[in-house]
Image 1 (cartoon, rainbow, N blue to C red):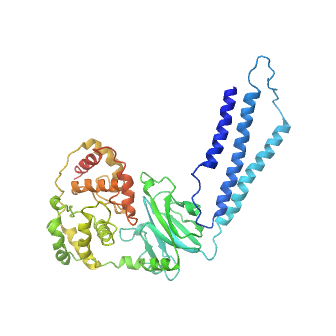
Image 2 (cartoon, helix red, strand yellow):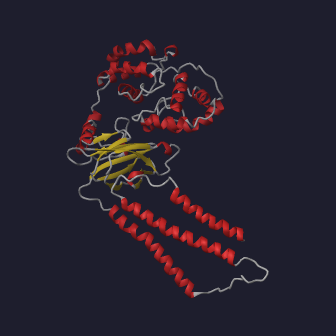
Length: 454
């Protein structure tokens, strides 16, 4: 029993040392919510004091009333003690009040948004963040999931005139003006999500069918990771974004570059006939019918989702792809993408590619198809159970595409040769997913299974 008492004391001492010497604690605060830190600290102190007191008392009792031959340490049995019950009730009430009272004041402030706060909307869906700002009229347009399409991912009502000037940020990176209070209106299009930035100290759930909110004032210029802190599905771990806090000049520059809803709906309609001329250069590598050419390291294009092809062209044009160390073939594509930098030319060539026959690429690899099927159970949640691709999860078509190219891209994702650029949010998600393919044959096996999805 003496040994047990010593172990309990060592547990208390070790816990205190771990708490005060541990490098894992709060991130540096970057908002006005220092009161939340104070509330958590009060909880730590109250719980810590109780933890130490109860365990040391337990250790004392184990030692004091241990079994002895002389029975000198025999405990006194007293089934009722009003004095003890009153004392414990008072001390417990004081402890609970000490923990709850600061939180009530903080919550009162948390739900009271200051009048000078600017609104923006954060929209969560599996597994992606998008944002919306009111336009010059300072009013948000109506939204409804019925209007959600690949060209209208936030579901803004196209017939509502107040929504025409809404600023649409389809990218998971959003910018804030330093020292400007903001109210975040939170909306989910599918399941429960949670908006959290550790440095801002506030978080709130996104509930389907409701608009929840939180507010804060960013106080430190910098880039902060935004997380979904509500388990929202198998891709929950990859649902990340960035909050960039800017000074006035940088913020105004970023805001001026963002499209309005009207802008996003005014994209030129592609002309497949005109695009044939643009595609003539592409065909030298990718083939006249977009079938791909392994000898020239050019993957199949026919059948590729146009929204995905558009994003890749833009990424090549902006240096998000093709500039990472170790990417042998991306730098070849980067200058070629500049041939369709004009929006009309880009839409024309995409329209032409859409007319090419989607003949599955011939398999060039073999693997354990059954093992690959099991591995693909994770992939299909984004890419579809038939590998058809889903714009809602920003995941392109895999079925029938060049298998040797899929293998190379998975290897690139694992090595962060692709997805390492700070602007490649979806590539960063794939970095994490690709690293779940463990073992020398995992990539080959999953691609071998994809080859069966015809």
